[in-house]
Length: 317
Length: 290
Ligand SMILES: Nc1ncnc2c1ncn2[C@@H]1O[C@H](COP(=O)(O)OP(=O)(O)O)[C@@H](O)[C@H]1O
Ligand SMILES: [Mg+2]
Figure 1: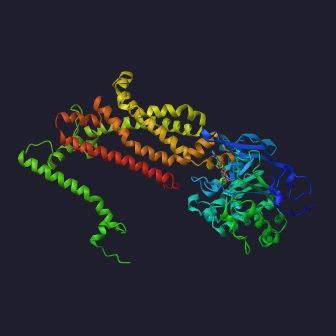
Figure 2: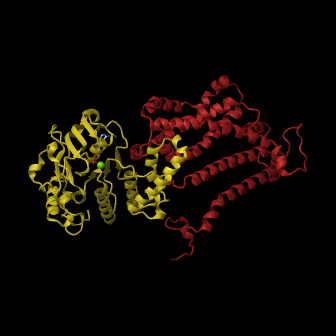
Figure 3: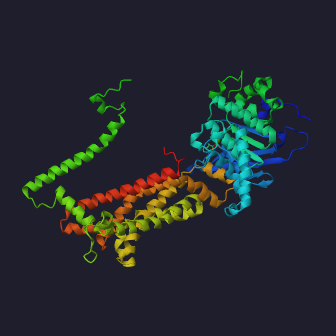
């Protein structure tokens, strides 16, 4: 059974209940991978006391979902991601990933930031092999012959995975500074994926790339996701990118002190475009409809986005 | 493109000097310095052929010979026909260089814990909170003012001089390492933890490995203060060493020895710096200074 496409309407402007997000392949009730319960985040702001960034966030993200997290700059997207990552902790409420409360950063989550995603002192191959090597053995365990056998196999696997990401053999011995931004992000994704984490978090991972590099990476990320179905949370402030990639959409708005209890979640919704084959998504009627609506909802306060017409031909975000 | 050279180019910004120009320009001020010195020395020797304040070329060569090729001690004579290397190895200059270098290297090795301290302060928040204020305060102590205390504690032998060097440079190096290691983007550390790194992995295999070239550069910058403290110690209390000799020669107006010693020290520091720079480049081909 495939749930019916949901069209967004202004009614969804109200904070969506946690149950609003159903699994995309709703053949059986999918396991909940990430859940946030009554989460709030406030930073201390000197004399003015505290500044609330996130309030009353309730989300349940089923396993295997591709969640796009959309919202204007400064609304707290990265903060929300840092909570799932364990880099930061909520002022109130709790965050649960893979069944356990998040207490520290660990290998439950894979992470691809916008910048500084690779270790500059390691070659492409060393970068990608770093994680699985750690997972296999501590420093002393590396002295055993079985580790070296493992390493040879891992190397093959890493090369395969990098090739899949579009790297040529001669690139694999290069250092990150010798690669273009797009290549670096390809390697960063391969690096995260080789750990086979149940959750993959990407924070504006493609935002610094030029449009054509960006769209080829979008396609790549989609096909990789479709193969092994990790739970992905993809932060972006680009509507086209969000509609193209996501199965589930979460739109965050900026917290306003006038409404201290109001949740930042403006929309939490399955995307009708997810039912379409990837290549057809951006020319579909669903896409245009969603796009137009989102431009009004997500970026209502920012005129920069309002004037931008919905993408008609191609999906250049 | 017009590549002909116009004199007006010399003062321009939008010009690209040829390699020949840049190479030769780099030596001009050396030549000017030597010429001025020679001029001055000749003028003084005209008035007084025995002048020792601005030694002539002959006097300098004689000074270098006696410092670098003649035996330092009477009970350790060296054959005047022996190979230069052997004569040098018995000389005053060699012995002074050796004892100064020994102090210098011991101090450098003792500074390694300072680097590790700064690294740990940057990586471990509680440890950083414990140490930072104290080190920042300690850094403001004028190390030379501690010299009397060091003499009392360590005696006037080797260790007081080495302690002066270490105490003088360590706080700077700790704070420098701290700042450099703090500069590692948060993303790198987060990423490392998602790739199953332990705390030790993050400290040494991620942060230290990544900032090592910058730390080596910081050590390079600190070679000069290190030499400064060494010289202060040697001039006040020592029985050998490069600075001891310079201080001793001052009493005899031995400019023919002092000048070569000064240049020799500069050359040694220049070489130490060049070796570190070269090693840094070879070991860290990935390092791209901004
Ligand atoms: N460590 C912090 N201290 C104080 N304020 C912060 C901190 N981190 C983020 N903020 C504030 O939280 C808000 C949301 O930031 P962020 O999550 O980075 O937004 P986004 O990723 O959506 O652009 C911003 O207004 C930012 O100034
Ligand atoms: Mg952000």
